[in-house]
Image (tube, rainbow, N blue to C red; front, side):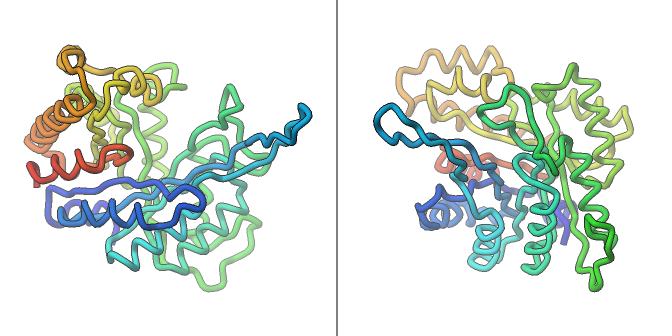
Amino acid sequence: MSITELIHKEGPAFSFEVLPPLKGTGFENLHLTIEKLREFAPKYINITTHRSEFVYKDLGGGLMQRHRMRRRPGTVAVAAAIKNAFNIPVVPHVVCSGCTREQIEYMLLDLQFLGIENLLVLRGDKAKEDAMFQPESDGYAHTTELQEQINAFNNGTFIDGSPIKVPGKHFNYGVACYPEKHEEAPNLQTDISWFKRKVELGAEYGVTQLFYDNQVYFRFVEKCRQEGIEVPIIPGIKPLTRLAQLQVVPKVFHCDLPEALVREAQKCTTDEQVKQLGIEWSVAQCKELLAHGCPSLHFYTVSAVDSIAEIAKQIY
């Protein structure tokens, strides 16, 4: 069943995103996260994909050795483990970042063998050492190029043009969208035109970057509808949990914090007080979003699992 079918089945839908475990740390903590949130009947769980990065090993004598390492491997395996352990639909992220066309094709084959049919298709982040996003030599610079490969795969063609003798079930996919525009977009209108192109290529829904001002989301949806974008636009929610996030969130996620939220956060003297404020703010956000007809809410769980559980208790 596609994500658009799931979110309209018995609303309002609840879903969340998790990260694969750090290399060598096992599945236990992730299992506990899902156990804590499964009581709210998530319609699906997203699993992020992370590129490898350069790390440096001190060899002594002033010598450093550079090598690549993927800190969070195993997106496909984690998706399969969640699907099998919890019987909850999973949505692994398929990204351009750090991937060649051949690696993407093998990932699609693995997912198809596992019976996983929903994807979130993204460009992904640039490498830490790069000033701008750089695709792999045989990779993609844009989400739309990746969509074209998935579309060809769905239509029974490998990247070398040869036919897939026994095509499997088609993949359904969504894409990201940005109410306050992507950090690299010159303006919001241009960013919306890129989102529209993704929809034209087959994206069935958009899930937004996190935001804290619902009016920003409402204006974004209205602009998208004016441009003829009719797919569901699922709001992404991440509650504040720490004082430091007043600086970190705008820098990392390129979104504004509303003046009223900042004013209340500045009154807090402990992270626990900020956590409670974050819960209250997100509950109010979610209630207003649902009152405006949003069919689904999607939560980003990093450093916020307990808060999300409390929000879900009050919403669902």
